[in-house]
Structure formats: C-alpha cells, structure tokens
Length: 211
Ligand code: B12
Image 1 (tube, rainbow, N blue to C red):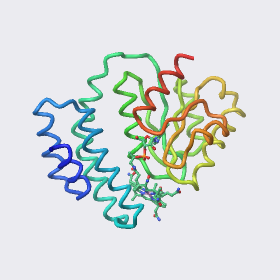
Image 2 (image 1 turned 90 degrees about the vertical axis):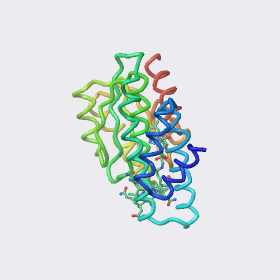
Image 3 (image 1 turned 90 degrees about the horizontal axis):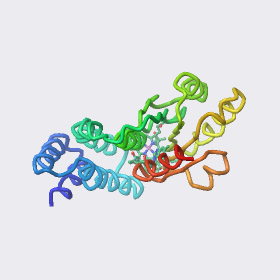
Image 4 (image 1 turned 180 degrees about the horizontal axis):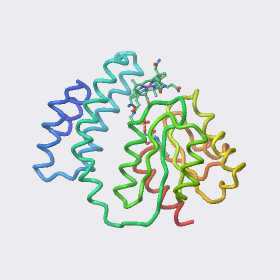
C-alpha cells in the first residue's frame, strides 16, 4: 500500500521518497487531505511513538519532520486552493513563547484554511504581548494557541489575563491545543474551546464562530 510506504518514508526521514510517493498518490487522484492523514500524519505518529519509547532521538525526529514537511509543502497549496466555503471568519494562531514545536500548529492552520477561514499565523515562540497585539490589530473571531511543552503551558492563562486587562477578552473566542493540553485544562484556564487534533480543531472553530 502506498499510504503505508509514505508513512514509512516519513519514519525513515527520506525526503526524496516522501516527495515521490506524495506526487504519485496525487497523480492517482487521491485527495490531498487523505494523503496528509493516512500517509504523512500516520508516519509522524509512528515517529512520536518511537521517540516516546526512546527508540528515536532528536536527530531522527528532525529528519522525519523534515521529510514530513517536504510532503506537506506539495499538498499544502492544493488544500488551500480547495477552500470552497470562504467564510469571512478570521483566526490568529501561534505556538506559545518558549515553544518551538510547529508541526501540529501548521496542520491546524492548514485545516482551518481548507475550510475557508482566514488564518493569520504568528509562528512559534509567541509571547502574550504579541498575541494581544495581533488580536487588537486583526480583530479575529478566534485566537488559537498551541503548546507542546508542559513548561510553556502557563503562557496560555497569561495571555488570557493580558487580554482581560486590555479589555479584549470578550471580543475574541479562544481555542487551545497541543499534546499536554486537555479539555479540563482548557476550561480551567478560561478558554472557549479545545481540540485534540487538526480535524476536530475545525469542528470546534466552526462551533465557536456560530455561538
Ligand atoms: C517533533 C518533536 C520535536 C521537534 C519539533 C519540530 C517542529 N518543527 O515542530 C524538535 C526535535 C525540534 C523538538 C524539540 C524539543 N522537544 Co519535542 N517533540 C516532538 C514530538 C516527537 C512530536 C511532536 C509533533 O510534531 N507531533 C505531530 C503533530 C501532528 O502532533 P501535535 O503537535 O500533537 O499536534 C496535534 C494536536 O496536538 C493538535 N494541536 C496542536 N496545536 C494545536 C493548537 C490548537 C489551537 C488546537 C485546537 C489543536 C492543536 O492538533 C495537531 C494536529 O493533529 C513530541 C512527542 C509527542 N508525543 O508529542 C515531542 C515533545 C513535544 N517534545 C518534548 C521535548 C521535551 C522537547 C525538547 C525540550 C527536547 C530537548 N530536550 O531539547 C525540545 C524543545 C524545544 C522547544 N523549546 O520547543 C516533549 C515535551 C514534554 C512535555 N510534556 O513538556 C515531548 C512530548 C516528547 C516527550 N515525550 O518527552 N521536539
């Protein structure tokens, strides 16, 4: 199966193979979001599992992320072009200060774009002040924060406190996610929504802009 081969190529960190297989699947008419979920993401999941089991270390993880991103770059414009609903809703997204993980955040951003959201991506290592500035400047419907490290989780409530202080909290919905974030944590720090993956992030975002 080519999806399995693609996932394996991500695990191997083989950029050339990932590009070739992604292009092959596309030429066979497979939808880009399916290639993303069934191939590239399955591969990244295996990498995460191996890292957890201490079978993979940072250099291997970096090689795999680079290979995954190579496939992601091929399908990204296709998913973005596919956005049909063209909702006028805006999302400001970023990974919190101190945290450089961006694979998950980029996927959430891509999935939101594919459903017609206008996404303003502040990148990684974003301090509360910059989130708040972006909310003032862009007036988004949703502020989305990603945190992959327990050590940077506190940036989420800090940002919410600053938004309150600046009287902007009630002007924006807040959605949070990332491996250590849970539904209970999201609620406890006063955010409006949480999702454990990029697909559910879209469901939650659509729900937030409705309410
Ligand atoms: C890849 C990776 C890296 C790469 C990051 C590359 C990159 N460009 O992102 C590199 C090698 C650079 C890295 C570095 C580090 N990492 Co790291 N890394 C990982 C790993 C293996 C996979 C993360 C990933 O990309 N997963 C795949 C994506 C698709 O999943 P995801 O990120 O979870 O995102 C999904 C959901 O969480 C959700 N989501 C994510 N964001 C958001 C936002 C919103 C709004 C919503 C709704 C949803 C949502 O949707 C996403 C898509 O489905 C994880 C292990 C793990 N189990 O998570 C460790 C992990 C996150 N890393 C960890 C650590 C400790 C580090 C380092 C400190 C290691 C070190 N000693 O140097 C550094 C930190 C550097 C820094 N300051 O940020 C720990 C964190 C532990 C903790 N609880 O704090 C983990 C959990 C590994 C572990 N078990 O120890 N890492």
